[in-house]
Length: 139
Image 1 (cartoon, helix red, strand yellow):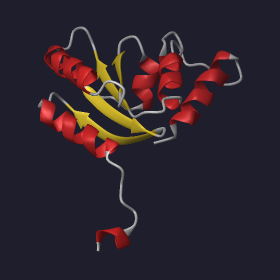
Image 2 (cartoon, rainbow, N blue to C red):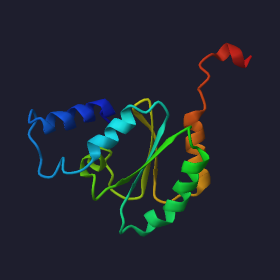
Image 3 (cartoon, rainbow, N blue to C red):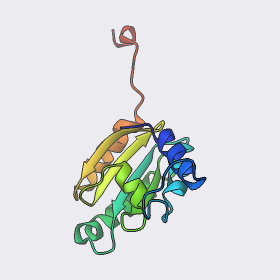
Image 4 (cartoon, rainbow, N blue to C red):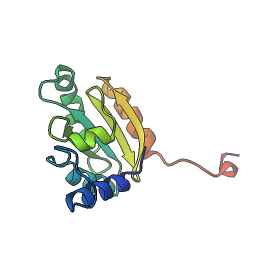
């Protein structure tokens, strides 16, 4: 996957006419979301959904709980695939709900379909837990 910074450059270039535009490619708010994602100092949980999606409606209260419980530790973005084609295409969303965790501009976790809250919490906690790169400390 291309770094998210590259997506921002592509979207910006397309808006200024430097890159050929695809029909409807920038008729959405994807660029605003990209700005939020790449400038976030904390990990970002991205929930791709649609109003017509039954499983997405089932996931909604779980995402709301996660947003409340992890406030200040992660940023939660809900992105409507019908209104944000550019970003949905970039993340290669082919089914919804699709949840991605982004840390330091890199997708580090993806979870497809509706899962239990514990699955999302485990993924978030893995992202929030610093990796111990010093094997000497383990001894």
